[in-house]
Length: 407
Image 1 (cartoon, rainbow, N blue to C red):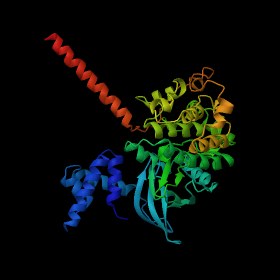
Image 2 (cartoon, rainbow, N blue to C red; image 1 turned 90 degrees about the vertical axis):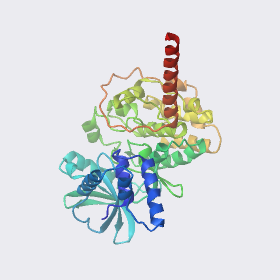
Image 3 (cartoon, helix red, strand yellow; image 1 turned 135 degrees about the vertical axis):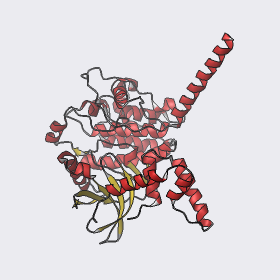
Image 4 (cartoon, one colour; image 1 turned 30 degrees about the horizontal axis):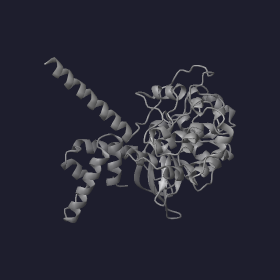
């Protein structure tokens, strides 16, 4: 398998060795050289432009090569690396028996000897295999070869919502609803089969070129009725800080489908405002805000949004699970009404008589909780950048005025 240009670009951005803009500029420079019959690899262009040194490139290539399976996975031809996360690396591959493209998630060697990681890896495959829905990435195969555990799944030709948000995109209400409705239908399918996803977020939502949405990564999914798993995980937070529900933060035993509704609400909030619901300097600070800080309604941040959408998001992100939607079906009813330009009937019928703002305030009845340390994702928000810029300009202005007064 070759170390492709696309693979190199992704790895460099993931490891903060270059920005997406620098990679894009070097790719354009490479195209110009190709047109002039001066073929050069992307690595060569990056080195020539000083974005990366030759030593850094070889070190990076060695690291990527070491993470690859040392022998072929039977029945599959690895083509290129698609990306990596905290627990696995994903490759694009060809399934030889039917000549189709697939994605293969491979557990790195450092985790292969840890029974907990291996067990979670296989549970993800088993959870995905229970589901068959057009808006869920389909499971195909799982196994072990040469000491590497692998999980084969449907290959989605497209991009994640996170990539769009990272570019500073703010979705219109209708654009966001088209996406969130498809995710909600995927969750309804999973919930009806007793599965909760527990990690709904933009990185786990894929968009195909034709606009179809695919919910991915069942790595944290489990059966809601699995009391043994719930007992084993009691007191531990599982999820992503920017989108995690309060009950997941507390490590409660009775986490159910309403945790997914909360995370989907946080994702919808991010799409239509360009910022996450709660920001903080550390994951613990963000999670503290999920527990204690009132939510600023999205329509208060983006005036183009309807009041109805604000009401739905507030109901989805109520601090207490019992104050959220009673079922995924009820949520779908309201989302579909909003997509038609109508008021959300369920939230106004069942929750409307309450103070929605009060539902997003701290749950004072809950026991205090010690916040765990979790990995985080940096929210990319044009609005946040503008706020920081204005604050910096104000500080400079105050300093100039002070100096003028002193002189």
